[in-house]
Length: 197
Ligand code: GTP
Ligand code: MG
Image (cartoon, rainbow, N blue to C red; front, top):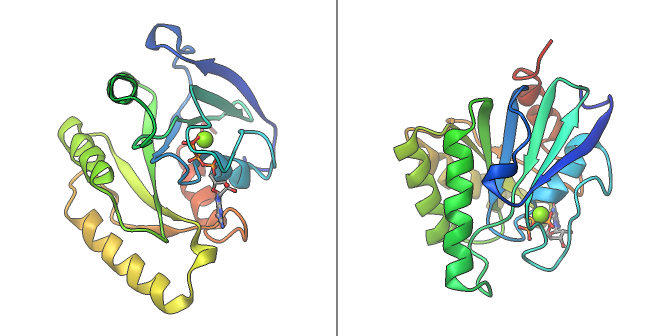
């Protein structure tokens, strides 16, 4: 699946203009700069499929990627971007939740948390909203190349405990790095299970 064809096929800035929901879909969510676009690139082995940038707020629309006609990956804009105006943040939250809640083909949300920083209030808010709306999500820790084994093990343990508190969270947490490829085989295997045959 991940070795086959993959292409960007749709960018949506408004809910009114989403592509037809005709394939299983996986959405990538998380704070600005957490590494969503980089993870989509690392999973698919394409360096610049999704545009990544050191500047937070890079991804400004819902970007849809088709994998071999069997699965759709959706790279979402980030939340918690300090510089964005409050009204923009609220619009984004509204659009993101309307999409996630209303998308019949959505199989799972991959919620990215930066392994190198504390989990923020905005992350907890998002998890609470996922619980309330019964949107299944799985936490993936990003940028794990920046941690030594000891701190990484402790971070994993605390994030697993956090996941256990959220009914909509998948119990398993995956440690990943888009730079070293850590966690990619596990994540690919999980996502493949959602794909069309
Ligand atoms: P927005 O679209 O702004 O919400 O950001 P995003 O979540 O898509 O983040 P993006 O993939 O653009 O990456 C943000 C920054 O983090 C870039 O400078 C990346 O090079 C860096 N980055 C992403 N993944 C990793 C990783 O696994 N390890 C390290 N060290 N840096 C990473
Ligand atoms: Mg992005």
